Length: 408
Image (cartoon, rainbow, N blue to C red; front, side, top):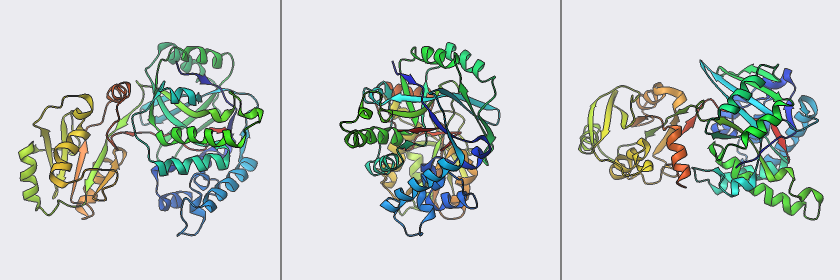
């Protein structure tokens, strides 16, 4: 069983929360982060992506960036944040359109992460781990939560519904029309949630694999720094990581679509003919309606692709795997989507219009719109100890950095 732990949240003053809260550090480029933070001195991007305040040619991983992040964080703490006096559990609700999801904001033991009680489905990159590890150690804080999922429990759902009838600590709508609401679960609700969470056998990382891996590495670094201090004991805050855990019935996975820059020397007609030898190809729409269907946009037209081969297991049956194994690699030679510069990825929240724009403008040769992976598929893969194909899930809406911070 995973352990849900209350913590003393460092949180924005309500009047400043909307201006402080920022998109996750890893969903925007430096240029996009600079644009989002422009004119807003409170934007948490000045902490999570501090290179935006330095010269444009600054290496984002240089010591100056982490130093500036620590300085900006200290300044924000003094002017706009409150540190809770007592440890608590928090409830964080995301509402986008008619959908809402409410998660448990808390800390979770890194020992549970090590023991795979908190399960992973993604490989992490060492350079990205290096970055967030240095960020956490420099700030002595985890400033953005990991997005966890658990199989829904009626007892927890009932407790959450009751606790969220109270006055929230924070409630605002972000620029992308997502409403963010945070409550503190005061006693006895907090204790009841902790007790009910003991019935959750497994938690799954949905988004934030690099944050979790970096927290585990930061623990090792801080253990070295505090060797011989009481702070390094079993209850040290750096032995835990910040997360918000949502029931699987509420979360939404959008597709992670693909665009390719060229057709490997083929004409559009020749490429379509070769695709037709591997897939059933019929006129299609921009969004696949069913699993087992892939929409391809080529020279101003949408085509629907249905694979001719049956896959033998959960991972190879995913549409993202079918596209990779039966088209991208054999026809285009794209073997590693994480390193091949000829492929790029477009989160499903941007819609098919973005795929059409990229192809029609000549920036891409073709685009592929996928049916989203299900949460059940993700959990099956994680339970089997498997790894999802790279860039296969896009969770939306996303948690904001800077709303709940865990000081370590």
